[in-house]
Image 1 (spheres, rainbow, N blue to C red):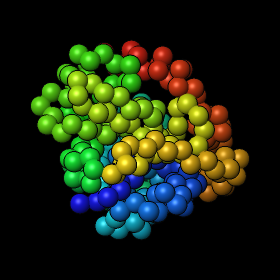
Image 2 (spheres, rainbow, N blue to C red):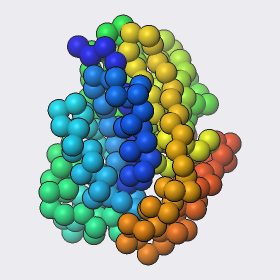
Image 3 (cartoon, helix red, strand yellow):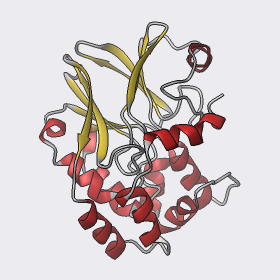
Amino acid sequence: MPNQVAVLSDIHGVLPALDAVLADPDLQAADVIVLCGDVAAGPLPGQTLDRLAELGNRAVWVRGNADREMVALTRGQETVVRDPIVSWAASAVDTAHVALLENLPTSVTLDIVGLGEVLFCHATPRDDEEVVLVDSTLDRWAEVLAGVAEEMIVCGHTHMPFTRLADRKLLVNPGSVGMPYGTAGAHWALLGEHGVQLKRTKFDTEAACAAISKLSEYPQVEEWVDIFVRNPVSDAAALAAFTGFAS
């Protein structure tokens, strides 16, 4: 039973952001690191998967929609891909990377000291790309959590950190390590006997953009890092954009 669990979601192949979090003393003190999906679909997919693989048994993996889409693309299967970098990332990883992503579970439950059983998923327990938000109605939350026994649910997908109660269930979104919506920096969460802490690890975004641009072969990498690393959209803008998908 772990005392402290770090939760990293939506890394999206942004290796400098991941490295900043992995160097954070609070994360280094965690017993377990849960990866809540969408780890590789970004400018440095293979390098990011290699770094995460180095965590060994300390890491607990959960599949995200972009992870599923990348595998489907490498297998020649039909899938709906809204973000072009996902298709590129699928072409940039090797067979070992695909094998790592292919059989990941869609959810994991851990018994954590001080918190009890906590369910981890990517978007919702029933769907890896369903959208629910901090201001979604109680009826909406009841719908997506129907049949879930755990009293704490940790999900990612929308890239915005929050905690809230919904009919006695505590909902936690750690935000995004690599593609934050809101304030810049790598967002993650720490769970344990002291409760839930939403964390933000700051790093040199200009140096990160330069490193990604140098290492990545993604054709639109300069534009990508400018939008998602250097100048992330505000939480208000992201909430407005997601609203139509959240009902």
